[in-house]
Length: 310
Image (tube, rainbow, N blue to C red):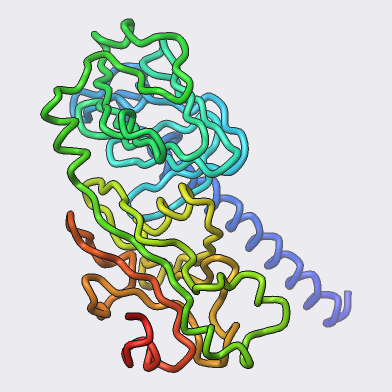
């Protein structure tokens, strides 16, 4: 064997080892995310309940997934998979045209249709948030080993309920709202710079979404609210997640993207008339605040600050 063959053989072995390591890393990474395999608690792996962790992860299990849905854990979003166990702090997002079936306590199930968000709270509480029906948005369900048998076999578009929420809690939830508005009226004075084919996405008055009231959930950011109102109103939204900053960046709304109307054009947002110094996924929204998403055709929003958005 000559030197060239030896070098090529060494390279092939190194590539094979690298691929194997990457496969192992992806497998163990998924297990770490789910808390399964080597990363499962010792008591859980032995089939015994883990008294140190409440609720028992096995109480809420993904049985089926249809379409586009994901789960967010510790600020990271991951595709929702059948067999995945949901834990305290997890949020299940169901996109348009999709549905998810969650097994509750081993004796009941909950079907989450499009637009429904399920948050796993401490103590086995599964909070269901609907984007369209306020009555559902204020409901929650406590799931425990004792109450699991009370869960109905099917609940489509509704809350699996072992105990009804109090009227005071419902009223408190419905009172937590903010106002959202989405406009691109700056484009009306800059049509000459608009990319070909984009005119059809610009409303005559430049208003993509008029002043709309949005329900607020605990910990909501400006990005969370934007996603929710766009899903409810059927407004197209595209965004990207940047792991380095653990943040989301809004690329396009209503099929209008950055640089569609000039090299410095793009989307900006204001809260109570002020442009924040942080991205939308880092800004918490308080009840009563007004969030304005405005399309700017000039650098740093010079045209919007000049009063064109009034």
